[in-house]
Length: 382
Image (tube, rainbow, N blue to C red; front, side, top):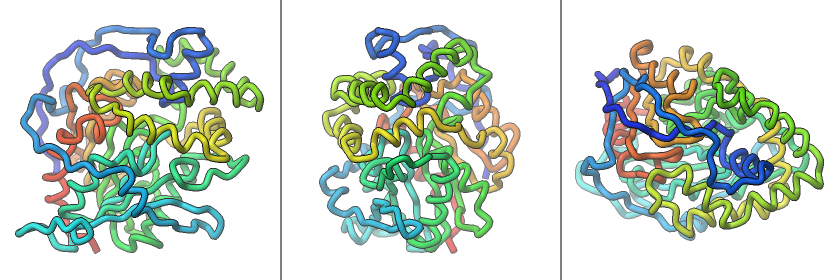
């Protein structure tokens, strides 16, 4: 059901050039000889988001029930995908957490599958799992190449492969119609999966700052990207040289480098704690992590969400942090998604003020304020 959305308040915000995810930002600054926290372009723009409801961080919200990373890791399981790739996943529900409450929903509520973004993993949902699991079974997955899942040497990663992984996981493990919840590149994988599913595996879609592609090659109509295209091509060439790629990757995965990148993309700086830094850093030491980094950064961008969204008739909830430097609201992807409620009745969009690229970990209480009522209005899962 489409929600009537209102004009958000105008707010000046810093808009950075959109470098595809954390790795792109780090290596570009490194090659330029600049500090990782420097930015090339800051500007103010008129507000194009007349169809989006604005949701302030000052709004009263219920504090999230955080789950420890150690507990998440202990409960993770393994699934052999296609008979050869080990995929790490997590499942939690009300009974496991002993959080049954009177009047809570039954198992007829559709399960959720949480899909992380670039460089992240299951533990990035540490501030969401307990809250969401009070009413529904919650699954989370490490995409191939990330977290504790396999990182096969020389593998060519694509958005389509991740989308197929999601669909196969629902079919083989969840075995029920599922609501997909994704962040960044994980959102795009969920969009592709939803558009390709012909087995009624997906019954709802939640997008948190959806990416426009696996990397910057997808965003060709943003002047910030056009300005930097020659640099991107040079970096792609350099990353295909094994020695140079290894040197750059070692610089990118330094603890302080990761912390600075996270501080630049989170609106709530207090959310960038030591635990978060470790969540991002730990998988980078796995065998195959360098190959995954290079393949994802230099590979094809994948299907364009602009072409896919009109093909999706499922209920869709879009939440967008307005302080996102990777997919800014005034960039082509942000503008497109903000316009969708006026075009498609199945889509609702809300702008989260003071929130960055990872709303679920940045300001989880704001995400839950919008997500929980939306989930409660979904039909029962088959």
